Image 1 (cartoon, rainbow, N blue to C red):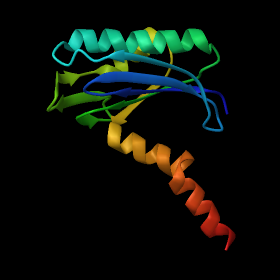
Image 2 (image 1 turned 90 degrees about the vertical axis):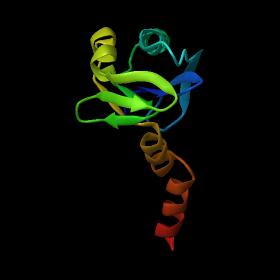
Image 3 (image 1 turned 90 degrees about the horizontal axis):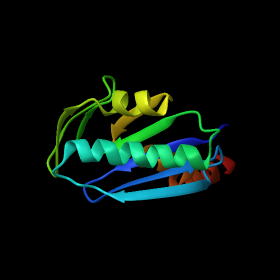
Length: 131
């Protein structure tokens, strides 16, 4: 599986990494979140994604986990209690700049998926399957 980019858009920082098919981290980038400046948040997300693409040009997609209420089908962050964005079409804003497909969901949903796929939950499921 080709490497992909994962980005966590949180209230204090925007953290991203290039992840190999086996779940190992190839490279990382992080910037502070300017929680009261929606345009600065978008610029920081795009900067992190751009730097990660430069570090591993073979990436094929971007996954965004964002704090707040997210309409993942529309690719829009509807709002968040600790961030000033409202109705922000972040999927489109990142995809147009990165020239890659982008998915977006709530950060807790993305964390649970990562845990189930690569984390302790995945290891426990494999152990149980061996019994």
